[in-house]
Image (cartoon, rainbow, N blue to C red; front, side, top):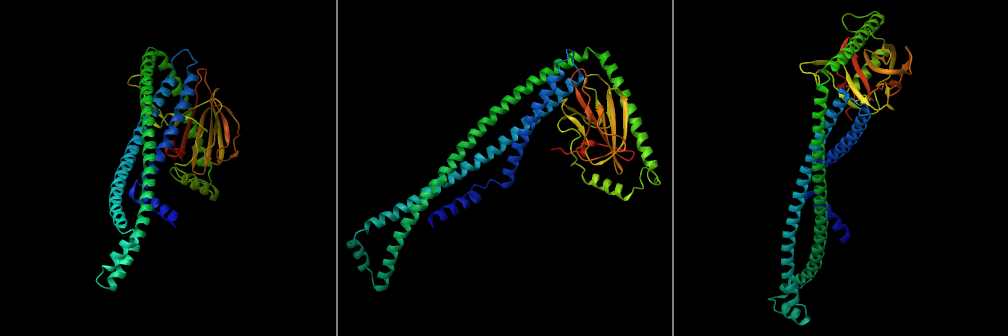
Length: 402
């Protein structure tokens, strides 16, 4: 009976008195998971940087990686700050609950002391009889007898109550100690990350300075890259136009007259927006969709019709959704592009140097389709695009952010 009462007391205490919102607890778990994910991503980025640093010359790819790592580190520091803020709130709640417990215990002990003193005065049979016989009538004597019995029960019950609250207080004190240790560790980790961030920003400045001296070569590299991209975009548009034309009696504009199977596949692809797997099992987005300022060349902007994913040489390209391979296009000897049709949608995977599928083949979600090219400077980068008919899409909105 007392055990179940104690469990009930503890349950009520932690659910009502502590009042650490469930949502806040969930947020803390999410923050911890995010911190671990960021730490893993930074470790992976470091591995990629070490590969690019094997080249004696500084590269734009290395600069992009350092920029990415700085972004990751800043996000990690922000996550740590949020974790510390949540922990401060929990520590505050715990300290308040301990203070409340102390006040309650003090009040209980005072009341208990008064009752114990009264019981002590009437503990002998003689005193008990005097207390009973001094009653005005029989009814009052009976009430006094009941009162003495209740005093005895109260003493026993309150004694257990005080013991149980002391146990709860001990648990709370242990929790407070653990929270303060965790906070100390998080503050130490925050300091470490801030120091690493400062080092990385210094490395970035040195690399930018070094690359700025290679302006002529950078412009030449950019021109070659833009020529490849223009060729790829031309091929994509021609293939999509061909597919639209060959679709059973093409509809007007950019739309299709899809077969029932194609319509189902298209709707399924659209339903999975934001949930598609990455076109590489692991990697980091080195360049997002849209127009970007060149990281080194002043007043030079670049256009990206997809996203670039930096990864390691052992990671291969894979289909983000089931569909049909409609084209395998050679852009250069080391840049092959695979285009897969998903009803009205198309996904494009370029910068492959070896392809494992053939035109016309039906592929499944996450099926490996080719090997991503690794250049002489150790950079392994996949270019990925998503199209809806003739309309280019931002792939960042389609793949999962997990």
